[in-house]
Image (cartoon, rainbow, N blue to C red):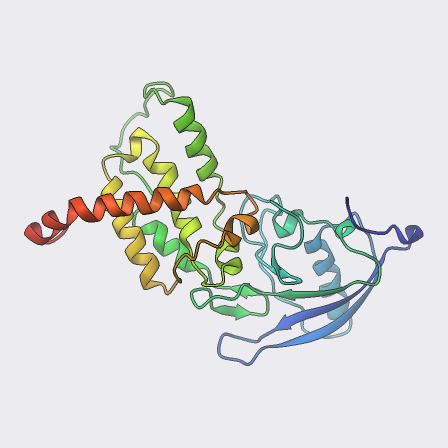
Length: 268
């Protein structure tokens, strides 16, 4: 069901409560705006574009919000809409959410992601560079320079390849953090750990990777997983919490086997 109303071709009339905040030190607040005649066929971000056009025409400050590809791939369009990360549709990024999902006369609350590790930069824009720092600690494989191998040089079981591809679908948007009551990043880190640990290319650095990435995750101030599964429900790519179990398994194995080596050699 789309849930929207055609309003006889006249478009949707909406009341928006949008979070406004000049910078991360400023006291934020909601401001209320009215929009009229919004097409149910436009996307949520296109609706925000129209809001900003209206504000600019009135000589007022436009609303800052993140966006890039607008194709549900980059993860930039991270908003909390009526209390839900990315809005009411399952497995849908904000940019892929369409206004037909709303009713004529609706009131919509629009906020940035709320987490200690995602400080607000301005209005609806969060600093999610904590994810970049976690990736920099180990979300890659080291390879020798030179000509690439043939595509089929490394045989990989279909089940492992499918699971790795499912985990690699994570776009790093941070909805899992925004939806979690503890602001945990376990689903994100679990997905990044899983898609490499399931493939032969990821094995040489497997233990080092999980220890380093979890250590950085803790440094960034993310909370602990409470097994509530809100992260999976909010994920626009449907990343499974099974990746968190795989992360915990790898971390336990790495902790037990790496500790003597770290104590004797001073680290990896």
